[in-house]
Length: 263
Image (tube, rainbow, N blue to C red):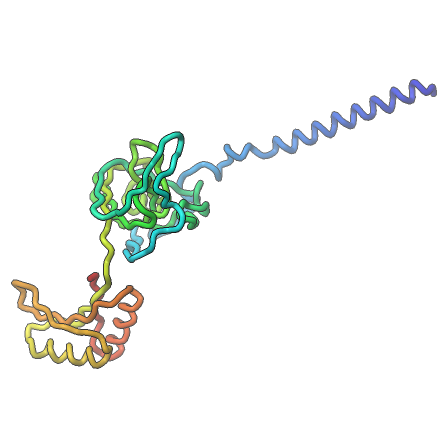
């Protein structure tokens, strides 16, 4: 075989192998759809919807310091500047609400916390983070309290972006938006425990003295105007955890199950 023929064979072999490599590589790339088209990247409800989302209890409204993240004086998104207001006190507004779900589940929110679509949270453009608000679906009257820990929605026709769980509780998860009213919830200073209600003041006073001795907590008797009952109440106490502990102490001493009331 001549030298020229050998060189030609070698060259054609290299060309053939290069074509095979490119073909295999491209086939491998095309075996997975682009990430922006992948089903898991499309927002919507979870694949399996947990039971009980519609009956989630409202989060406990408690004092929280402003988050170190998510509270600049102003910020700009898509060329528009938004300002974070100084206080949520007195905030009340009606408009459209939307919701977000699986596409953002686990991602970091503006507060730095991971987004959990199964919790009662929300995104707002201007309220301080965190803020607790009461949201009322004006179309069916359902309400829930949510904790704002994220920024958005950046659509002018919407005033709040709710978690999937909140949308379920408000009854519009099967739709994109609903007409709602958003109201800031005042911080609760604590709780009181109502341990009994009596028509006889003497019996109420006896329970008051017994509970003060048992718990070491201030206890008092109140009578609501227009009602014949004397109510024995203990507190106030800070935090529901402490209120529930005292509830257990009272129950264990055979004084019944005290009712925990916001103060």
